[in-house]
Length: 177
Image 1 (cartoon, rainbow, N blue to C red):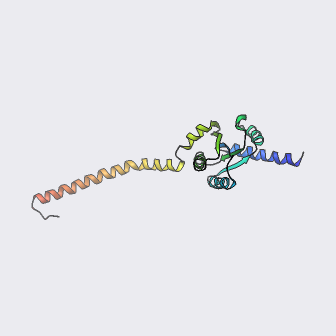
Image 2 (image 1 turned 135 degrees about the vertical axis):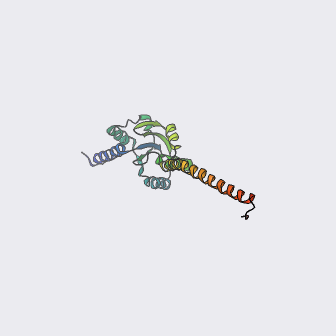
Image 3 (image 1 turned 180 degrees about the horizontal axis):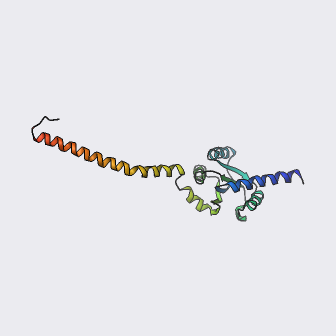
């Protein structure tokens, strides 16, 4: 077996392992994306435990079959870069979508979310979902909301009681506050 074949098999195995561990996957057409912009995107995604890598379509096809992801052949045409998220499923897709809005590239082709295949349109919809941190903040706000309402109601009653005592004192000719 040749050295080149061993290298390709190692790349396929590594890619297949990454696909198996992925929480979400996005295939993109990176044509027009400069190296500096690609590095900027990679750095941003790395912080979210996600990788953005240029891959050969033939190797990606083999890795997809090896890991149980059936990638349609029509999605494996042209230059392909893959976003593999290992942590938060949504935030890397949101960041990729924001990057695309700012720079116009790369173009989303196809993806997987919870092992389910999704079109580029569905991935764009997922990118609109609030991130984990924002959802947690909303939950905390909802939990605190009844407490804040109770505090306002109770303090309102206390204010009204003090106001009533003040009016009684004024009506009896007492000392004015």
